Amino acid sequence: MTWSGRDTIGVGQPGADREIRYRVIDASAGGASGSLVRTLITGVDNDDDNIGLSPSVAYNPDDDEYVIAYAAETGDITEIVVQKILGPSGLPEGSPQTIGNMGQPSGFSLNLPKIVYNQTQKEYLVAWKNPIIIAVQRIAADTLDELGADDFQVLSGGTSDFGLAYSPRSNEYFLTSPTFEGEQVLGQRLSGVTAGQVGENDFVVSAAGFDLILRASVVAHPLREVFLVAWSGERPGFDGMTDGEKEVFGQLVSSADGTLLGPDSFRISDAGDSGDGDYSAFDPAVTFDPGSLCFLAAWVADDTVDFLVDNEFEVFGQLISPDGREVGPNDFRISDMGPEFDGDTDTGTLFVSAVAGSNQTLVMWMGNDVPMTDRGVYAQRLGGPNVFSDSFEQP
Image 1 (cartoon, one colour):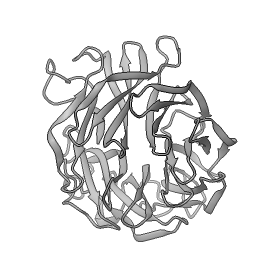
Image 2: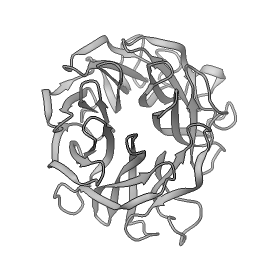
Image 3: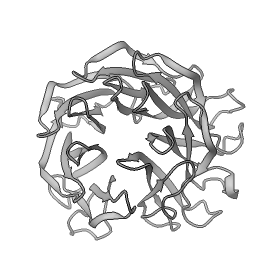
C-alpha cells in the first residue's frame, strides 16, 4: 500500500516534507510486513519545493516485486517517476527512474499517474495526465527502461482522476476518464502489445444526463472479457435523484471489442434517500474480488445507515456480478471511523486491490479516526461479501 503525505516526526527529520510512503502487507496475517513505513525521497529532503505526489502501485507476480509510479515535483517541474520495490521485504531496488516529462517547459504539471502490469508481455504500462490529456509509456519489467514510443497521448479528458486496467483475457488495456465538462465518461482501448489505440477513439461510456462527474475507475475481470467502469456524479431526474446528489454508477464494457454490455449506466450506491442532496457517494474505486469471482466497488459516503449523521463519512462497498447485478448485502459498510454520530471524523482517497494468492481484497483509505486530528492511512481486508478478515480499519 502506498500514499503521499507528511510524517509527524517533525520538520528537520528525514521525510518531514510531503513524500511517497509505502508499506508491504502480509496477505496471510494482515499485518504490515517489516517494521517500517518506508519513504521515497524526492529531490532535497525537508524541502517543500521537492515533493512526491499521487502514487500508484502494480504487483508483478512473476518476479514477486512491485513498481510504484508517482509524480515528483522539483521546483517548477513535475515528472513521472517509477521505483521498483522487492517483495516481501519492501526494500527499494535501484534508483528512481524518470519516464514521463513530455518535453514540456517549466511549470507544466504532470499528475495522477497509474500503473498496471501486463503478464502476457512481461512489462508495465504507466499513464498520467498532462494536465488534461492522458499519455502512456510502456516500460520493461526487469529494467524499467522505456519501450516503444515515448510519452504518447491516447485520450482526452478533464482534470479529474481517471482509471487504467489491463485484461489478460483479451491482452488489451482500457483507459477511462471524465470529460473536462464533467458530463460524460470516455473510454479508450489500447493494444496490449504496443499500447496503441484500438477501435473507436475516445468513445462515450456513460449515458446522457450526468453532471459534475469527478472520478472514474476501471478494472478487468481476469476470467471474462469484460471491464467494469465506475464513476460518481450527479444525475438529476434519474431514479428520484435531485441536483447536488452524487451517487456511484457503473458500466460494463467488452474487452474484446469495446461494446457496452449489460444495464446502461447502472446505479451502484444509494447514499441516504433519493431526492436528498445532503447525502452523497463519491471517490469510487473498483477491483476484482477473487473470493466471489465478482467485481468489488468501494466508495466514500455520508449515508443514513447505522444512524450515521450528515457529513459523517464512511467507506462502503458492493459486490457486482460479471453481468452487472448486485451480489450480497447492499452497500455494506467497510469503515468505522471515530465515534458514531460524529461528523468531525472523515474518510477519503480510496484504493482497493485484490490480494495476490488469496481469496481476499484490500480496501485502503485516508482519514482521521479521532476528531480534529491529523489524517492517517487505514486498511481493511475483506474475505468475501461483507466478511471481514480482520477487525475494523487497521492503521
